[in-house]
Length: 157
Image (cartoon, rainbow, N blue to C red; front, side, top):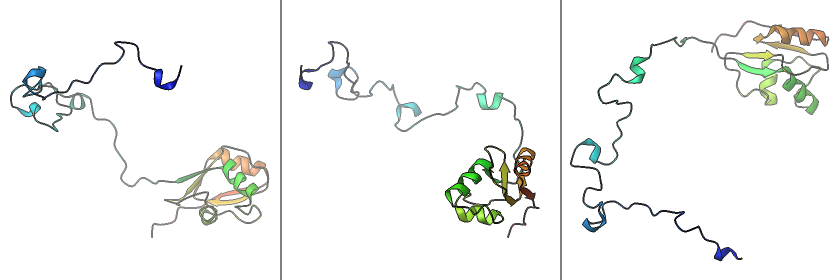
């Protein structure tokens, strides 16, 4: 058997219905859309309209709010910091600051500051100064003999 000899079983495929192709086709002239009106036109979608019934988005209660002055931190895991030190992209002996993290490419933007989380292991003694850190991250760095200092967030320039 060759590729050109392959074919579907009879009745496995069905031809697409071509509407608006003359009176002999059975779906000519108006193409099954009825007479006039919004829904007979092209490009019309009546989203979320439920025929006059109260729409779902109005039936459900409003909940919560978005804090307008919310702080957004760039998040870094300890394991990633260690990985960058092992790869030679970060100097583990020098102080690791937010600017050093940005320069190494570990953090793209500081946003409102950098927050360190405890995922991963730290093998060496590190001195890290960042805007925020989890308690577990501070404990992990201290256990390795280093120090994780949390500084106040800098004012937006």
